Length: 322
Image 1 (cartoon, one colour):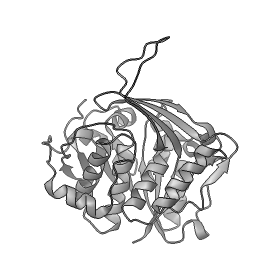
Image 2 (image 1 turned 180 degrees about the vertical axis):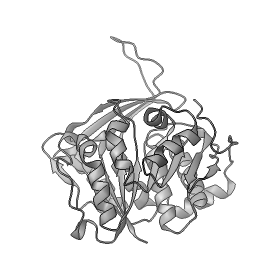
Image 3 (image 1 turned 30 degrees about the vertical axis):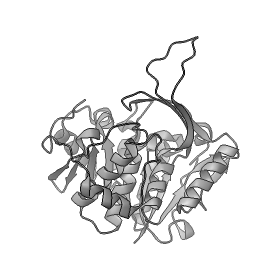
Image 4 (image 1 turned 135 degrees about the vertical axis):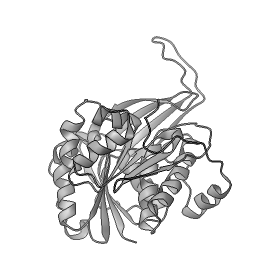
C-alpha cells in the first residue's frame, strides 16, 4: 500500500462538555474537561495510522510539553513524525465547547501555525519516499498554506503523487480567493455543507459540483453529517447514508472521515465502499468525546458495521440541508 504524506496543523485540544450557554462573570460546572489531540493534519494522519495505512506527517509543534505529548501520541499510533518541525511559538491550541447535542464552539490560538510553511517544502527525497498521495488537511488553518497550497499540490502532481484536499472552515471569509488556485491540482476534494456554501455560494450539490469541476477538481466527496456523504466523480453521483449513532462530539469527525476514506481507497476498496467505511469511522468518532477517541482498528470497524443501523438519506445531488 502506498503511503500518504499529510500536511496540516497539529493542535492541543481542550474539550469542555456539556456547555449549554455562556454567561459572563459567572461559574458553570460541567461534566468533563479533557486534554487531547486535535488539528486537521494530526487527526487525519492519526486516523490513517490507526487503520493500518502508512502515513507521514509534515506539520509544526511548539517546543513545549503540549507539543511533546502530541508528538508521542502520533508516533505511538504509527505516524512517521520524522518531518514534524518545532517552532519558537507555543503549540497551536483549541478550546472546544460542546453542548448536549454534540454541536461545538471553538476558540483557537494558532501559535506556532503562524511560523509553519513560510516556504513550500521541497517534495523530493526522503520526504516522499514510499508515498503515493499528498493530502493537504485544511489550507485555511495555516497562513503559509494559504499562500503556498497551490504550489505544494502542483509539486506533488509533478512528483507523481495523487493529491487530495480537505477544505476546512475559512475564518477570514476569503474562500475561493485563497483556495481556488489549488483546485486545479486537486484530484480529490473533501468538503462539508458549510464549506460548500462558503466556497460556491450554492446550497445545491449539483451546482456546487459543477463549480468545483470547472476549477479542475477531479472528484468531490461532500461530507453531509447525519445524511452521510455524496460523491461526484466523472459526472456520476453516489449517495451513501450515515450510520445511526448518538452524537456526543462532532469535533474532528470530518478529519477522521477523510483519513478513513483515503485508507480504504489505499486498500483497493471502491469509492462507494470507501465512503461507507468512512461513514462508519466518522460515526464511531462522534459517539465519543474528543477528535480521535472513538477510532478503532480496521477489523473492529468492519465488525461494528455488520450490525450497525443505517440512517435514511435524501437523493444524490440534492439540496444541502441545515
